Length: 364
Figure 1 (spheres, one colour):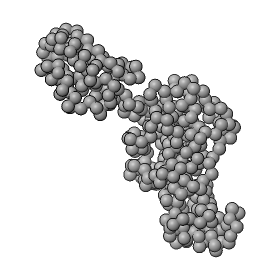
Figure 2 (spheres, one colour):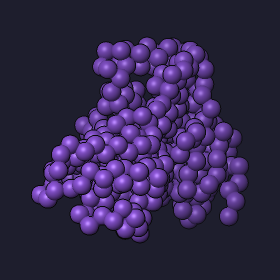
Figure 3 (cartoon, helix red, strand yellow):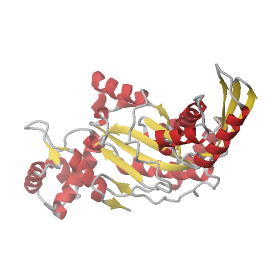
Figure 4 (tube, helix red, strand yellow):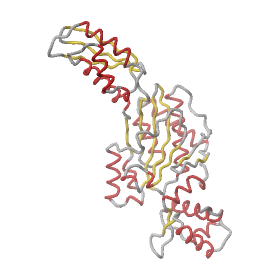
């Protein structure tokens, strides 16, 4: 059912007031705000209908209303005003970002600490190489029982392994395997290194020593290692300042999940090259059970060298989404320009902001 303009205004007023006070919102508070030209009785009727429609809920019979995840989603997608950072705020973010990158050796963990300080919520930063492959194989024969595997990766870094064998191996076999791996295993992702490919290479090399399996295992281990996201969590104790997490058990559950490196996005999401959107996940939209009573706001940045990153903050569903999204968007844009080799966003510039939820609706 489509919401009327008046219902949308009342829903927006409830969310704004609840974000500000963390207390259930009554019709009197909305009427006193002066944002609506209607009586308290009309507002009460509209609030009751919004409860019946699932956008609001009433914790107690005599209490005011609070937004539901469905209400927050409507607010994020259609109702909230896009926050614009002031000149002073953008100057401060750029100053502190420069300071962090210069003093603390550009570490992603310190970027997360900055995000946590700017938003006053716990922050999670993630980096991952995208579509990593092996560019070149070098198999170096040392002696009858030893050879070295050297992998040159698509980002021009190298990984090596010294292999000791309990049996003697022929140098010609090592050379054949080097040629076969360069022909069949270069430029392919981890998923393409299949048992069928390994077995066919073993037969082509006439390898009865099991060297093919040893080399392929190192390839899989290396590609998995360089493609696994590196996550840093900071500011978990900031949850304790939020009224929703005054319950020690509830706070401990979420803090333990974040400290343990819990994922805030499905593995297939969030690292797409060129993505400039800000994702907002509200309550039940989150993938983890530990996040079902929380909201997550995430921005993506380009770290250069075929590396993508995410900056996310976790907090109560009563989050000031617009302000948080604006700060993360600006911070991510600044990181993309610095780490990707460009310039920082100019002071006063308001970055393009796309807020997208599971409904597929977008606001620009």
